[in-house]
Length: 197
Image (cartoon, rainbow, N blue to C red; front, side, top):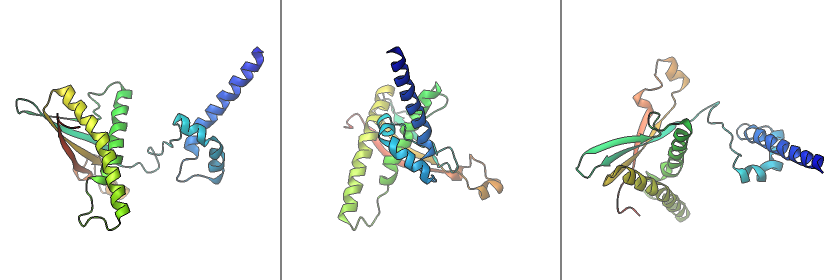
């Protein structure tokens, strides 16, 4: 009986380890046909455990980095500012990573809805999709703003999405620094106070 349990545990462990390997191996793009076929058998398990990410933000073409900058208006009228993630404040590294993932999630939800087309949407379905995404963005950002107000004792907070792009190879060859200010775009997200729902 004890031997049967060892076999069962070994098979389950081998299945899990192979799923952890298959997730990044099969993530698009590019992925081989073989990796996609193998992954199709593991997909429900990988999705259930949320291990179906590909880690392709490291290479070959990492995208821009996103942080959230905020300005807190204190009860005495002074303005204090901060950002997240912040390497100095958010330690250990796991805490920094959580704030990093929050800023990336906010970018994913807020980025597409901060600047709707000036002429509006011609297709009513596009407008509905835009409104739904804006609602999701508000549901994500409002609790973050309330938490900043609670932690700081401020009466108002302005939030900004700060995107730092990656320079092209040609720009780097021409001497552009990775910290060049031209790579930074700041977009207002909104202003929130104690009455924010």
